[in-house]
Every structure is written in structure tokens, then in C-alpha cells.
Image 1 (cartoon, rainbow, N blue to C red):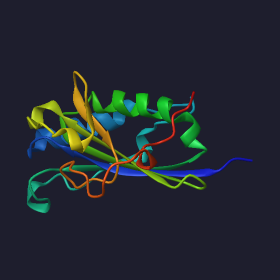
Image 2: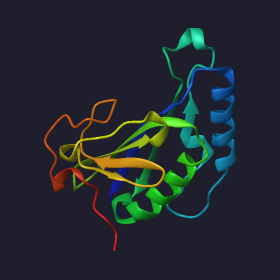
Image 3: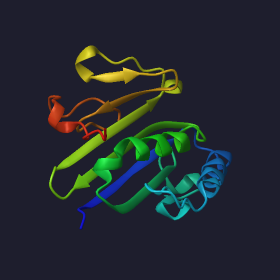
Image 4: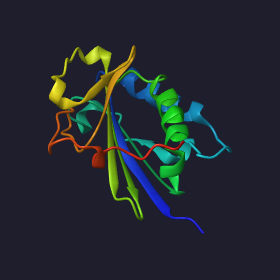
Length: 157
């Protein structure tokens, strides 16, 4: 037996052109049909409206899936998800992982192209590629509730 984990979220793409949407579609198609757990597959992702008269400012890629006990394979999933982000010209990515026994966890990425600097109390880690943080955040990355370790996903050993 295992516990069900639901993961869902969104990625805002950088720019608002037809080419932006086409690049997002291509990146989704390039994921392919991963057969190694934790799976990351094209069918988990969907790009919304591609005609800019039907979205405001930025196109969005949505994603969702269920897993067996993903919280125990979080590092593997995160590595695959970040490999996908590297294929995109994105601004922000927001992910929620709902677990059966451990509660919900939130993860947020902000691309360096957004030119944002966060205060220490926002608890972001800066990498060469982006800022990444945990906890329940606004669409721009600021914390909505004070940060504590309870809002960080469990790490597999």
C-alpha cells in the first residue's frame, strides 16, 4: 500500500506572443512519455489559450497528476520538473503537493529574467538559474503566511 499524492500547479510563460506559446507547446511535447518513477509526462501539462486576445499578459501552462507517495521521491520529481523549466522561457512556476498524511506543501520558482530580488524574510534560495522558495505564496512569490519548516516538502534521503 501507499499513500496518494496529488501534485498540481502552473507556469507563467515570459512574453505574450504566438512564438511564446509555440515554444511552450514544443517543450511540453519534448517531455515525451517518461517511464521512470517519478513520472513526468507530456499529458500532465496543458497550455491554455494561445491567442493573446484570450489571456491577459502571459500564457499559462497548467499541470496535474496523482502519484503513490511522491513525498518520498520529492527530490527526483523536483529534478525532473526543473529540467522541464530549463526548456522554457518562464517567469514563475507554482506547485502544490497534497499528501494524504503530511499535509500540503508549496514550491515556487522565479526566473532570473524577472529581475526580482527578494528580502531575506521571503526565504528564497538563489541558484544560477532562478530563485526557489517554499511556503504558501502570492502569484509573484511573496509569502502569504509566515514561513516555517511545516511548509517545506519532506526530503527523501
